[in-house]
Length: 298
Image (cartoon, rainbow, N blue to C red; front, side, top):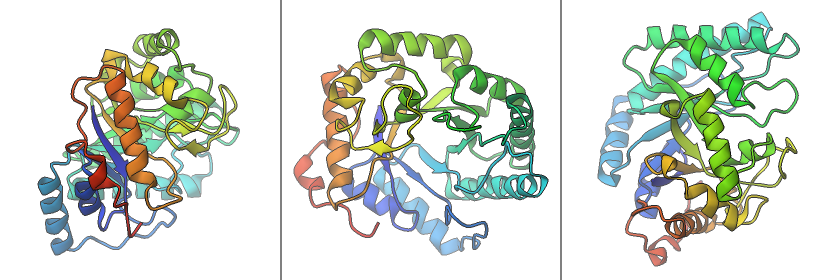
């Protein structure tokens, strides 16, 4: 496992290097706006140089919040489609391997129609950005008309995408609040067995490691610090113990309330992975004293 954080785009590689991250997730621009200024060549060159110096692998880009590929609203759908393709192109410019996106909400049009719309956008984006990142659909909390809360829906969408460049990102918080129990070795194994039968483990390419403020099946989509939510330290030890996860990048999207939250969450996740038997989980040299300087400029 290669552990890392979601960090700001502009200084993300430098912060990742300071903290010892071995993977990194960023937005490719303002996550709450449609318009994004083109990258200048100097920024791209410096960004890639810093990534290489920090030995970041893989770089992951997360989609902005406004994009909804499942919406029946034609105006929003077209705007989302173009923004989605633009962000995939920007992610390619950054050198990202993965681009993670939520499937969106079908707003009452039905899951089948939402799945059709998502898959259509993904196929078009892959064709228009042929050498871009792989597109990973993230499992959702399942509130309202959200798609992708079940492995069966994710499997149907990925089947419809018809490409090996389409895969899945598994979020631990979303899994629990959508009703998937992962907090003991037995239940984590059962959940991953179900994922293997539906989505297929070859399509699982990234983890979002987040504790949860909501309990099993609550649909309360609120991330919590590692070990302080309803998954808890024992739950993460159980989850990490499944060998089928050990080759995946593990990115934390935990709260950033205090300067030391990022290094503390990262260190706690590393300790739990070691306790679970993960062989040599990669996170810098594992020296907490270096990371306790905290993260500035976020």
